[in-house]
Image (cartoon, rainbow over all chains, first blue to last red; front, side, top):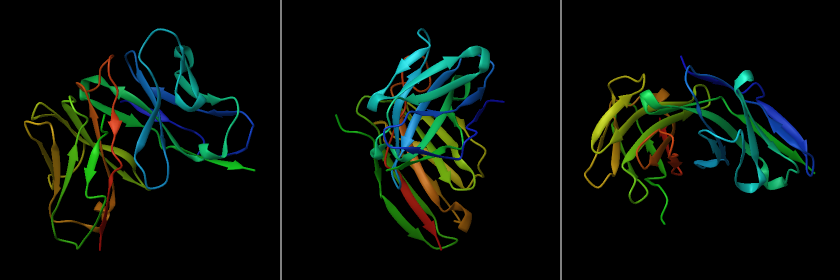
Length: 113
Length: 115
């Protein structure tokens, strides 16, 4: 069965420091991978996606993610975090055969001054 | 270009009642999916519609149902509400669903509280 693991429930980063959020997936075929961000009480905003091709993908707000097939990982990175990045981040795999997204449990990012 | 619109944003219902939530997708998008988000279970897939046909359904009881209209707008209905149905219900629209050429855009959600 398809699954996504985000091992870190909470992460605290100082403003200006770099960030890496981990995501591991389990999926039998070539995965469609996504990172979404959610601010409190809001919907999900797409940060970036990976379908195929270049394994390093660029997204909005200065985020990037690297797909590593050998490690079944799709980690999200940002070189310098801003206070406005504080939110919850979800990694998801798109399951074509069931027309659904399978989400990880999310990582809540806290940004300290 | 307008985004995905969900109405209402907030709802309070009593146990045993039923509720209907609405989702208007991005213009031109024909696929609409629904997800339930709770603190305990996270984000879970409810169902997906494409051109008025339900293509897939998640592992939810029959009290949860939905439909899609010819203009791609979608509604979901929950009958005989239970306390555990309290959640944020999110709608996502995409051109054709999950494939290599598209992505899903989410609405702001409807916060349902069952008392």
